[in-house]
Length: 394
Image (tube, rainbow, N blue to C red; front, side, top):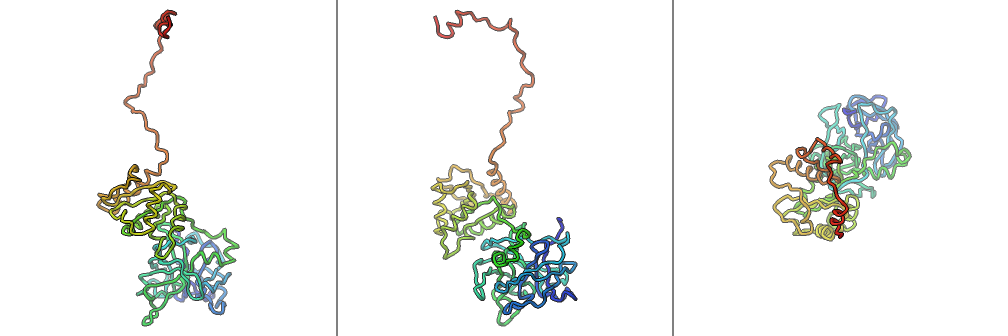
């Protein structure tokens, strides 16, 4: 249904006497009958035992009931089986096993301090590290959340970490935040940790057994790598966000190449995924302020990029000789962000037309009346002597 809400609910431990004011955490359905939550919301991580096998889930206007079917205390996750399928007013949350870094996220959950008791509350921020280890070497996503510095996150445990622009998918499950010593309800530096969906899919035998029921969001088939100088990273990210909202895949070099990393295999993987490359042209392009940027330019100039190279001018920069033959997409001279976005999308769309439509013959030059055939009596008569003379004979 177009008006269906995402199936993100609040956990109530007392299924016999459910109360929307006694929610202890959040949960989200990843199919019509399967949901995920944080294990510590329904059990004890140290012993691996659950407080109640059957729980209530508050979904906006009703309680549904679920049973714990898989326990993963090591990564702080519990898998729930909902006793009845979701109603048409709710839609499952798709999941994404890949986590781009850094990327913006939204989390929707049921904090204890929400302003409206029967409705969830959203927070947002940025995923800053997708390869953390916390506690007993458990995999984790490190998030930066502005609200976590001033708002208690109690109740967000088990909520989804949503990424992906218009088509949101869960890439993690909120788990824990380090507490400020002087204000235990608040997070140190806005830091929050989440369990990656990839770890949940790997660890849960139950999910593996019913994998066809889980809606896994896949990276778009078509997309672009974006080459840029370090000085132009924010512009590259903006272009990436615009393209993702159009349903295209994007790899921004400054997002996946981080300090201390071997960038060679990262560049190779990105270019294998999306062979077409957008090259941002600015006055800082050829200052080569990073080795990975210089390497990328060398790959372009040597013709080793397998797909199309699309120059995009963002200021009065020169066009390098090795792509001078390619007409650039020009983002200069526009007075608003909407105009820049339109120019970008129109320029890229024109290049995606692999077969331009054949031009039509000018209508004013068409002759609709067919010529009449000449009668045999009006055809010229050519004698044998004339024929020999025309052919060069005697």
